[in-house]
Amino acid sequence: MKRFHILAAALCCMASPLALGTAQAEKILNVGMAAADVGALDPHRAVSTQDKPVMNWVFNGLVRFKPGSVAIDGLEPDLADSFRRSPDKLTWTFALRHGVQFQRGFGEMTAEDVVFSLKRAADKDSSSFAADYANVDSITALDPYTVQIKLKQVVPGFLGLVANYQGGNIVSKKAVEQLGEQFRTMPVGTGPFEIKEYQPNQGIVLVAHAGYFRGKPKIDGINFKFIPSDASRDLAFSSGELDLLYGRQDQKWVERTKEAPGTVVDVIRPAELAELSLNQTKKPLDDLRVRQAVAYAIDRAGIAQFKGAATAEPATSVVPAGYLGTIDAKLFPHDVTRAKALLAEAGYPNGITITVIQTSLPTMLNSMQIVQAQLKQAGINLELQVVDHATFHAQIRKDLSMAVYYSAARFPVDDIYMTQFFHSRSTVMTPTAATNFSHCAVADKEIDAARVEPEDAKQQALWATAQQKIVDDVCAVPLFEQLQVWAHHTKLHFNYDLKGSLNLGPTITEASTLD
Image 1 (cartoon, rainbow, N blue to C red):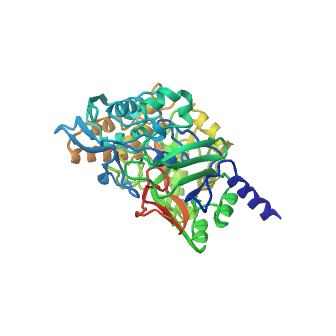
Image 2 (tube, helix red, strand yellow; image 1 turned 135 degrees about the vertical axis):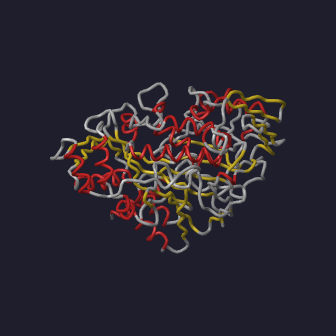
Image 3 (cartoon, rainbow, N blue to C red; image 1 turned 90 degrees about the vertical axis):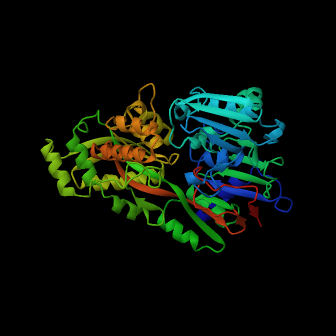
């Protein structure tokens, strides 16, 4: 009886006014997402995991990551037909494709739309990614099909700012101005799919963009369903109600799902790096010896093993592996005896208590409980104050937690990650706050110098020094890297080699098919 009710709930979730077409008449892709609702559908505000796959289907950038890849050196023209840069890397000129059409009849994309979009992405009042564009000096339309961007100083991985990712997504100027507040839930892009309907707490219906410049998609539409319950989502997938599923970052789930007939499990990059940021302004964490004790008490390999080798790897630095500039830093080895000795040396022979605000999201809470158990062996009591996810984000940004467990992926260049998490300008509760929960400032000089260094070797050396300084000062303790997990039935064909997606979900292209 219990199984019937769970399955009924899942099927009920799928059978809603959002249903698009019929299986006989159209090829409709049904996707199940582990979320209760969307965070934001405006591409310049979309920061949550559940938002990003949809942005990838609806929008384009001037350049793009090849479908299935997160390699920076593989970036290729997208809305731009070609681009060039000046020898000093400060001026970039993009020649736009002619005839690219916006969705829902909003006309041809021109340089005016590109300039509007990038200026909008750089404006803190309209974008969550404004800080990424701080070194942009000017964005100019030289003619209807040519855009020139001038920089104040060299920006590492600059093309990432104009790629099909976060602030680089190009919107229709006319649509933003005409739709007003409605644009937040019904945005207009140039991508292969357009949003037809959004219903809070249920899902999003997308339909093929017939005027897509690479050709009309072979899949007619996508039903993107919010199903927060793991059990309901799994049952909807196994019953065939879902074709593509946001999976669990869990070894047993991967092994079990792989065994199901006609099923493929995709474990992809980028990995989200989980770290424990230690607030250096809170006693006793203001003492380096105490922070070192925390670092010695944590067993990274043990955490990764517990999470499962199929989906997790031990951290190697304070920046995710594979990013431009990441090194294998000299991290603190697991040594409980050394941890206890450092606490005693710091004046805490009987141990310490660290009060932590923690999200109730199961995967994050589970990971923090592993850390909690490890720290306890060294006499470090981690007192968890568990709150819902929205409250968690609000409170950690108010500097209310002694330590913050945070898992994140960013554009794969060290500058962005280190700036957001470890530069003093990004410290929470400051005018330029981002995600520096530790109040770290030890590597500001190197981070700033690397950003403007034109020689690659010197830039890499500065990033290496910055990472090791952050590690040595124990601004944060790197824990593990969690890969993304999705599953799909074999009737869905991406028609490219899926190794990764910066938008945290498989790209559905005009060439993707559904049997």
